[in-house]
Image (cartoon, one colour):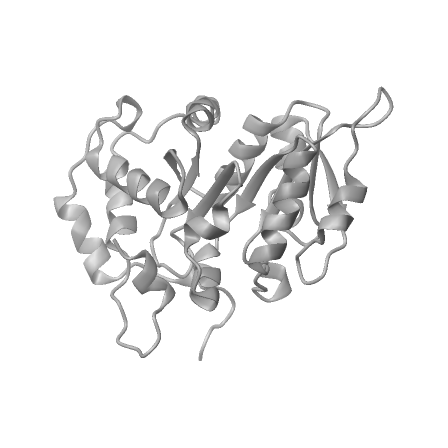
Length: 260
């Protein structure tokens, strides 16, 4: 029997499990876990950002980003099928007091003109649009990949209107492979972005959220509020750094591009 339900059912390889035994660890919240620090530095470089923070899940990445970028009563604009609308238990409202404006897109993507028409400058009667969230790839659209010019164009529209921009990059590396474009090219212009290691990459736990130094400082404060540091998180980060073994194929795989 074959289970094609989801890439979330990947499991850590023997090599990933073994690397835990020799991982250097320390107190994460004091910046003393060298393995976690190395993982965050690699992801920040990969995504073209100043810094990064290690988190247990991608949902936490999204929710911390919303909490950093938005104030209670303000609005997040996103495509209707995205993760924050359908799979995060109403957390934007619970954790950030955020309104969601969900737009009907085309296979998980939005057009620049569509976004521009949806942005509200706010009044005492309506919430002010404050943040754009895109999902690359669009999971509920069968893993559809935003065209690079389109994902940049909606970012430009958002920036011109003074909105913060966030990329849910849980499966960003699939877009990297499909397009031949680097992860940093996809993330250019976005204030925050993240990748997940517990999807097709096989780690049991972990996602890394990246952004500017100021953003990461604020993200750490929210992380503390939501449960705090993970102490010797290098036990988990080691498996993310190890990654699954590379496959010998004619085409570069998602794994080969992210393997550290």
